Amino acid sequence: MKHNEVAGQMLLEVILAIAMAIITVGAVMMIIVASLSRAQYSKNQDLANSYAREGIDTVRKMRDSNWSDFHSKNGSYCLNQGAVALGSPPCTANVGGIFTRKVNLLQDDSVGCSGGGALSGAKITVTVSWPDNKCPPSKLDCNNVTLVSCFSNINAMQAP
Image (tube, rainbow, N blue to C red):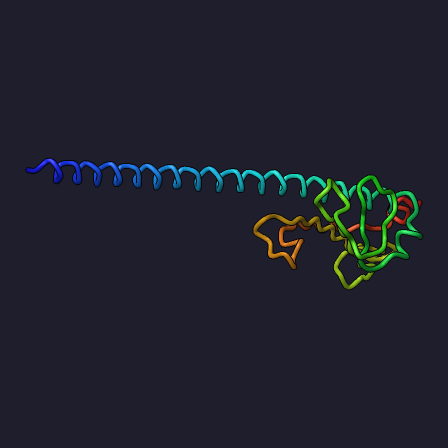
């Protein structure tokens, strides 16, 4: 073999080794980025669950404090963080910086939440949504958690 052929073969081996190293590092980086993205999604989903439970509890306190006022509400509302009253839509990121919490109240016996007799019921749906880098720019609430509960008139239940 001539000196030029050995040098050329060695240069080719070095280039192939560098290319393989770059591909390996790139694959490892993709795995790390995907893992971090999944971890962030799980964290946000846990927070959204917590904010939705907090929303159900807040609406329950509203029901407990004044059934007549609560029973007069029907439709979609916003529930900001720390709020003790329901707000009017449109809802923006109102909880934890990136989350949007909405409450839908249905005061209708046909929704399956009435206890019958003197009891009247309401179906409560709390939805907490949030954006991430996988959402299209036009859809900032592509991730969400929804909790549904039925509330009845506790005053009627406690009547003698």
